[in-house]
Image (cartoon, rainbow over all chains, first blue to last red; front, side):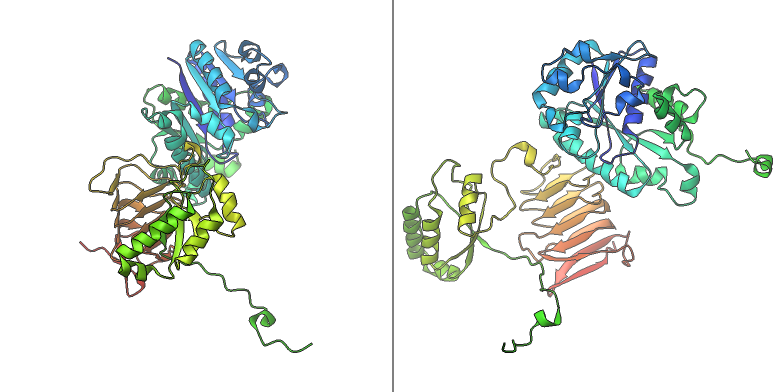
Length: 269
Length: 243
């Protein structure tokens, strides 16, 4: 049975799309048939991060409005055989999504895929509600700062009240916390909330910690999901996170400041 | 031009607008027929003259939850009947959208709280309830998150987990919070002045008992500690919870 996973946060710019791309790619690398859907109608970033923006012909809104078949809108990823991207429209607005239309698409995708990853827009309006409505599990992306934690708390409440599972009285959506842009050095300096602070504030099981890194910027500019940035902290952290999601045990990495050696400090890195 | 009397307008002081909490009587309208209402009021007053006396000149809120949306509502006549009965109608609640428009014509405000049969979408996100303990009491065993509201109508609210910033918990009775209390807690919301708030870790944004309220800053002497909050002589007291 296919699992629907929403990547959400409430706040913008915390790394939802980066995470959606890396997570979906990570699942596909493990051999799962995966599709990642961009719900951010009107802004359309996922296809850029996935490096398939020039192959977008039809999109989510076309399918919902019956102008294209689902198969026509799905784009196969160029790196992973079993990964597909369902891009969104840049010319429509969020009201183009209808509950019935999204439900129909989910039902059809469920037959074909193991995992359906929904990249939610920021905010708590209709687009975000559509993205989380069908979710079986949720990855709440949070930055180690107060406003991001506050918004994540809000979206966790909405997940518990407004998802399909909540409305139909089923088992609640399984929640995961992903801490992104984590800089152990800045935590040590008191500029950022620590991992423990965030865990204490949100009471949500931790799926992983993604370190703050320039590699993310390089990856998104080149249209490469971060999990493919070999030999980088970020790729390793995303692989750990996927492994934990699949039920494997992995120790937390990249949460301690890097010790700079005496010579390196003396002569520069 | 004659000199106007010295006023605060001259001194440039802003208008004084402040908040207040009032207890108002609510009249549940049984039918949309004004004549029937008049008759019911007369009957009732003959039966309980003392109560009638007590309610004379009372401000009153009209609850329309029993009036179906499509029913024609002669609001102007109904208001006349109420005024003739020495009541002062001050607002409507639970009015259907069509009736809300009528209220506007009569310059009557729509009061909030307890909404009428609404689509599940427009509801505030209610927290799932674990189990009722006593009548009206509410036991919650999971964090109450920002934006969520929980209300123990007619009883105590007991929360075994955190009440996060931006969340609001309310009870007609007492409130007990065993996780950190970071949101707002309002006890005795229907006017019960003996209600208290007990918490293991006071970091609340606002605490209130029977309409008396105060906000808290991080420099409060009991910040982060076990505390109880109660009202006495129109004053809110926050004291350590020494057990």
